[in-house]
Length: 109
Image (cartoon, rainbow, N blue to C red; front, side, top):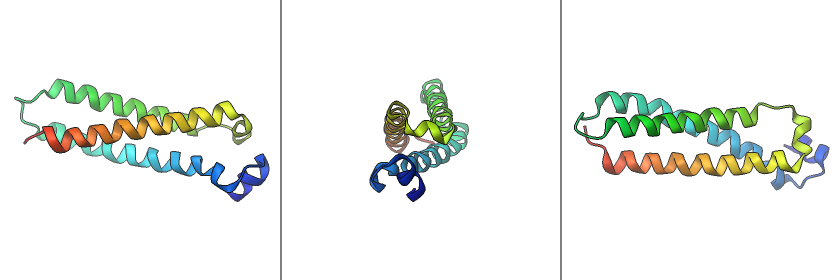
Protein backbone atom coordinates (compact mmCIF):
# COMPACT_ATOMS: atom_id res chain seq x y z
CA UNK A 1 0.00 0.00 0.00
CA UNK A 2 2.84 2.35 0.80
CA UNK A 3 4.40 1.76 -2.60
CA UNK A 4 1.11 2.43 -4.38
CA UNK A 5 0.55 5.55 -2.31
CA UNK A 6 3.95 6.85 -3.30
CA UNK A 7 3.66 5.82 -6.94
CA UNK A 8 0.30 7.51 -7.49
CA UNK A 9 0.79 10.28 -4.92
CA UNK A 10 -2.17 9.16 -2.82
CA UNK A 11 -2.61 9.49 0.88
CA UNK A 12 -2.39 6.09 2.54
CA UNK A 13 -6.13 5.92 3.19
CA UNK A 14 -6.79 6.51 -0.52
CA UNK A 15 -5.03 3.23 -1.32
CA UNK A 16 -7.19 1.25 1.11
CA UNK A 17 -9.82 0.65 -1.55
CA UNK A 18 -7.66 -2.15 -2.97
CA UNK A 19 -7.39 -3.94 0.35
CA UNK A 20 -11.13 -3.53 0.90
CA UNK A 21 -11.87 -4.88 -2.58
CA UNK A 22 -9.70 -7.96 -2.03
CA UNK A 23 -11.30 -8.60 1.37
CA UNK A 24 -14.78 -8.25 -0.15
CA UNK A 25 -13.89 -10.66 -2.96
CA UNK A 26 -12.82 -13.23 -0.35
CA UNK A 27 -16.06 -12.69 1.61
CA UNK A 28 -18.15 -13.08 -1.55
CA UNK A 29 -16.42 -16.30 -2.55
CA UNK A 30 -16.79 -17.60 1.00
CA UNK A 31 -20.54 -16.93 1.11
CA UNK A 32 -20.94 -18.35 -2.39
CA UNK A 33 -19.20 -21.56 -1.34
CA UNK A 34 -21.73 -21.99 1.47
CA UNK A 35 -24.74 -21.40 -0.77
CA UNK A 36 -24.23 -24.73 -2.55
CA UNK A 37 -24.79 -26.97 0.50
CA UNK A 38 -27.61 -24.66 1.60
CA UNK A 39 -29.31 -25.13 -1.77
CA UNK A 40 -28.77 -28.89 -1.58
CA UNK A 41 -30.48 -29.18 1.81
CA UNK A 42 -33.22 -26.63 1.21
CA UNK A 43 -36.79 -27.70 1.64
CA UNK A 44 -38.14 -28.08 -1.89
CA UNK A 45 -41.31 -26.22 -0.91
CA UNK A 46 -39.34 -23.03 -0.61
CA UNK A 47 -38.51 -21.12 -3.72
CA UNK A 48 -35.40 -23.04 -4.72
CA UNK A 49 -35.36 -21.56 -8.22
CA UNK A 50 -35.26 -18.01 -6.83
CA UNK A 51 -32.44 -18.98 -4.48
CA UNK A 52 -30.45 -20.47 -7.35
CA UNK A 53 -30.93 -17.24 -9.32
CA UNK A 54 -29.66 -15.25 -6.34
CA UNK A 55 -26.76 -17.67 -6.06
CA UNK A 56 -25.96 -17.07 -9.73
CA UNK A 57 -26.10 -13.32 -9.24
CA UNK A 58 -23.67 -13.57 -6.32
CA UNK A 59 -21.37 -15.66 -8.50
CA UNK A 60 -21.52 -12.92 -11.14
CA UNK A 61 -20.57 -10.36 -8.49
CA UNK A 62 -17.69 -12.59 -7.35
CA UNK A 63 -16.40 -12.95 -10.89
CA UNK A 64 -16.95 -9.27 -11.64
CA UNK A 65 -15.08 -8.12 -8.57
CA UNK A 66 -12.29 -10.57 -9.34
CA UNK A 67 -12.02 -9.18 -12.88
CA UNK A 68 -11.91 -5.62 -11.52
CA UNK A 69 -8.92 -6.67 -9.43
CA UNK A 70 -7.09 -8.41 -12.29
CA UNK A 71 -5.46 -5.51 -14.09
CA UNK A 72 -2.17 -3.81 -14.71
CA UNK A 73 -1.22 -1.74 -11.67
CA UNK A 74 -0.39 1.22 -13.90
CA UNK A 75 -4.13 1.58 -14.59
CA UNK A 76 -4.70 2.40 -10.93
CA UNK A 77 -3.50 5.92 -11.57
CA UNK A 78 -6.65 6.42 -13.63
CA UNK A 79 -9.32 7.81 -11.31
CA UNK A 80 -12.07 6.13 -13.38
CA UNK A 81 -10.58 2.67 -12.74
CA UNK A 82 -10.27 3.43 -9.04
CA UNK A 83 -13.88 4.61 -8.83
CA UNK A 84 -15.12 1.52 -10.71
CA UNK A 85 -13.36 -0.76 -8.21
CA UNK A 86 -14.78 1.19 -5.25
CA UNK A 87 -18.31 1.17 -6.68
CA UNK A 88 -18.25 -2.52 -7.60
CA UNK A 89 -16.88 -3.40 -4.15
CA UNK A 90 -19.73 -1.56 -2.43
CA UNK A 91 -22.36 -3.08 -4.72
CA UNK A 92 -20.97 -6.59 -4.21
CA UNK A 93 -20.86 -6.11 -0.44
CA UNK A 94 -24.47 -4.95 -0.32
CA UNK A 95 -25.69 -7.86 -2.44
CA UNK A 96 -23.73 -10.34 -0.33
CA UNK A 97 -25.16 -8.90 2.90
CA UNK A 98 -28.70 -9.01 1.51
CA UNK A 99 -28.29 -12.64 0.47
CA UNK A 100 -26.93 -13.62 3.89
CA UNK A 101 -29.86 -11.85 5.56
CA UNK A 102 -32.27 -13.70 3.26
CA UNK A 103 -30.65 -17.03 4.12
CA UNK A 104 -30.80 -16.30 7.85
CA UNK A 105 -34.43 -15.18 7.89
CA UNK A 106 -36.24 -16.92 5.04
CA UNK A 107 -34.73 -20.34 4.45
CA UNK A 108 -35.74 -23.42 6.36
CA UNK A 109 -34.38 -26.92 6.08
